[in-house]
Length: 206
Image (cartoon, rainbow, N blue to C red; front, top):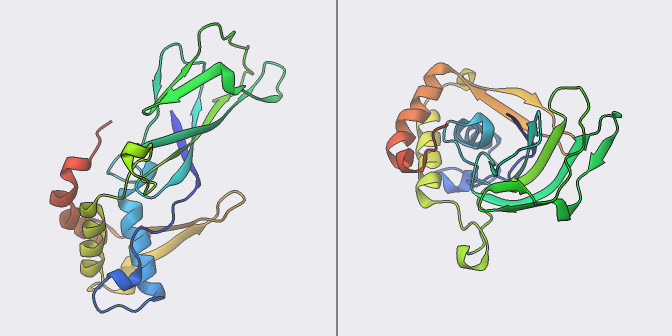
């Protein structure tokens, strides 16, 4: 099951949240992005989405049972696309599927169209992460306090390292623009050690 980020989340920690750092500090912004990337979404080790973001999961066939969408908390399915046997991309009607609490399923009576002979012909686009809206009002709530503290603590540790331990890897997102950061093994170990105890209860294992 291939999952990719289509629209990345906004930062959940800002430079001014770090003691002794001014707003707009680009080096610290890069550190925050690197630390968050180590935790968040499909590329992070936490197994969940933190900031609200849009994901796409690709499937090789129609699901015959409810499918649990990866990287909760789940907000909503935006659309389902598929390539028909004729090779054209089609949009699945809203009345053909339903989603709730991170589960996606096809409704009874849905006639599954034949699919194109190509890798992963079905794509489900959905939003996940903490949307800052109250859970009892249908939202996913605020980012857990321990997540923010883990990021802040890890950034404070990283500030003691040289700039060579943090570098820009790529910048691209379809129609949006995406900045990806990667860290050295040493920096990655510091991030993990600083956040493990705070975040162990939030980790989702595949």
